[in-house]
Length: 137
Image (cartoon, rainbow, N blue to C red; front, side, top):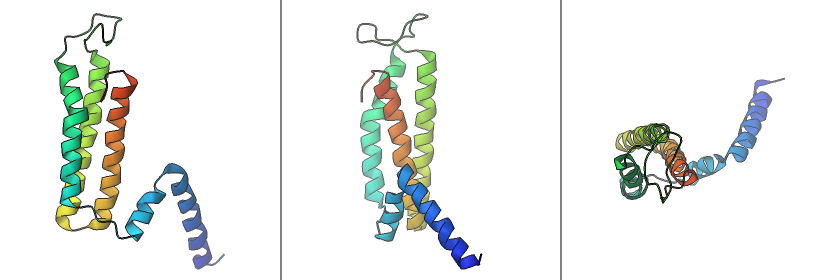
């Protein structure tokens, strides 16, 4: 098999995989000259700080739940395991914000788009943890 045909096949397989895991939008965005701006990042930071981060801070300020109980509206408290999961997810969001900022600052838009997509995924993870546990965003 010649190298050009092999490259075409591998590209097609790769794109098919992207289509199934949602990253085809990233490829399309780059192809359509989507530019991640400082304004995009600042808006995302403000939104994150006002929703997920505020929820994390409020949850962590609650007293620790007694053993074998968890957070409910009637029992506002925090569990160590959930708090650790939320803080770990928040750390991933912070890393993604920093990577996106670095790419924007360096003028690498392709890298900024990839970092932006990673940031969106990281934010979705912490919001899902919050939502799944009834804490609310």
